[in-house]
Image (tube, rainbow, N blue to C red; front, side, top):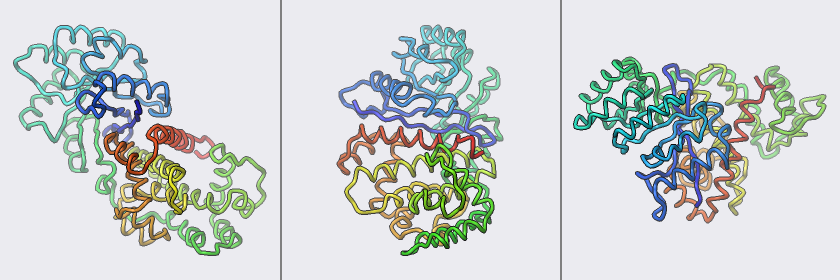
Length: 413
């Protein structure tokens, strides 16, 4: 069975990523007609912890994993370290005496327990007993009535349980539920410009524009590019450090900026400039921004890797740039059109970023589908693009590893 692993970040009240939820096929969204939910879940968990590796997926943070009733009865959570996972009990699991016993054992072993999409059933007395063992209640803010929200919030206060708001999509929702005492937040709100404080594109971001314009001319001159880089001490320093890091495997003695550019090659140098321009935004030290940067890098590498599987004549650098800039509006809090006006991007890249369908956009859409765990879309797109799902999964793992290495490179901090 071909499987993928996706993850969705979970934030705290100050915007730091504190965990990821692993997304996979389960009994409620079973996209494999011949495979039951328990088997699909188990195989994807194995893919996460063995085939890809939990460190690559989690970046050292906890992973929320959904468990069906059967998997809980089999004590599957105990096969994983309490320091790696949060046991998330699906809303389809009916509280019972047996479930209470399982949760009691898990708590004694030190595991954290989260209740997914929790709703009270007053006809079942075990619902309140379950709260004695819950650490987190996940609340679907879009499908929970105001009266049920109040009841859950009241119970959480009595039992000292932390609340996690799911499907948060706007800054107003984020602020509203933070004010109500919710500790954690999950959803795609971080990908929208409104969640990031609105401000002009930072000055240092413009410092890359002249270099980018020269790089995109039909006859880019290395001498001119080197002079532009040399005028910016910070850019020169970062270029030399990054080019000599393990990320680019270019360890060598470098005596000039021109030599560094020649050694790297213009195409790779162009990619490097984009990476540096995005990395600089981390000066704002915001958890949400850092996560957007991480996702952007994964998308960039994934889009570039998908080029290997196609026969079109578009530039691999164009694929990379499309993925790299796909969340730039969210990162800077500026409309995408405004950003594109100021950047010398190829027309096909700009069109893809504006939502127009072309080969760049198809690669980006496939990357996003994997990222969000939309497996039916992944399968449909792989079939339409005539590419192998297993190969795509391998490329996604490599993209995760590459982005982790780049962001964790000690010499760049």
